[in-house]
Image (cartoon, rainbow, N blue to C red):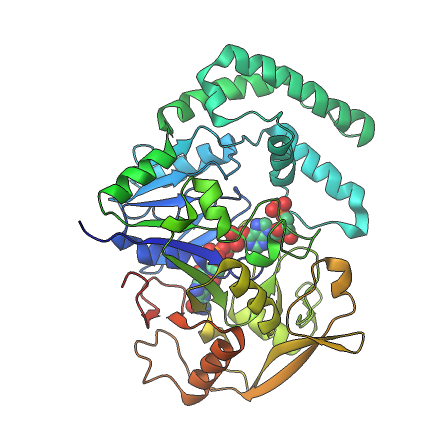
Length: 440
Ligand code: GDP
Ligand code: IMO
Ligand code: MG
């Protein structure tokens, strides 16, 4: 039998590390790509021969016609977002619905989740999380509270209707009386659900069994994470996090595969750091693009890196590489290798700083604290290295990289304790250097 490889791709920072690009690149060797957590809060950008596609919910294998795409039970599924994405992709001539399979256990995101997400953010005022406003948190809450509707509920529309009535009555009470917001109309939502059921029913499948069958046939699979490790509900900068387990363990529980079957954990890591939304970010180089005021290097990274959210269009906060955060990420994901992305964005910098520890109340921390409050008093300690001031765009061999760029990469590897196995120096699928193939 051929030897299969199950590869997990996770973001190691605060999201937008370039996961979509790398999943797309590596899927030429797999039978299927499985999303295992998050929802359409994700924005994964794929650029192929200059043509850009942004995916939110559909796995990043969809542009390869012979690859199947699975949405695992860990994903919160917004049927309206799915409908939009399927329509957009099919308009380009792709077969999507025949290749997309959805777990019956996916919790649904419905209109009241979005209304609650928005109302809660307003209520938090200046302590807002800065969510994507997609209803992600409220949908996960319903799942854990065991009152949520799931994709499999579309199989029995009369019981779906009853469950929807009950759940909506509960949430409308909160919306109207606690948040003083508009309630959601049952009739309108029910009509939409009837339509969604037509689209979703043919795509429902037993995802754990499909995964197991492919593996038995010796076929490799790719597990695509969304968001990033520091946004993990348990291990991230709580409460400024998303509502799922973004870490490698989430692949097992959110797809339905035993952890012993996962062969390689690839941590997608930006060569600097970004974060969108609120929450601690010790290495931030504060810059505001609306007023054009703030740190010039923060501005340069954001401008050269086009650091605007692929989902909400919000400006991403930029900063220096944070090895403290990455050490935690390596630890809790069990990273096998890193893929370092967007090195080219740093091409013109004279000097580069790397945060190697935090100073907190007279103590030096090599690992980050566990909650946002404790971050308040953390001050980064930096090491400064010379920049390379040469273009690395599309670099196709390790040997021809500028020495200062190689030194930077080696330093990061040493600080994090994980080797860089892939280097990305441009948005296009082709602008990638595989140093050590995760499939070998
Ligand atoms: P994801 O959410 O992790 O998939 O990442 P996003 O797609 O949200 O954000 C990454 C952005 O950087 C996208 O616009 C990509 O096209 C782009 N990108 C990815 N890798 C590289 C790279 O190596 N260099 C440059 N300049 N851009 C990159
Ligand atoms: P990808 O997969 C970056 C952030 C939001 C907010 C927090 C909670 O493209 O890397 P949520 O809507 O999930 O409740 O918001 O998480 N966030 C992301 N940041 N990339 C993402 O996805 C994100 N998905 C959510 O900005 O701070
Ligand atoms: Mg993104």
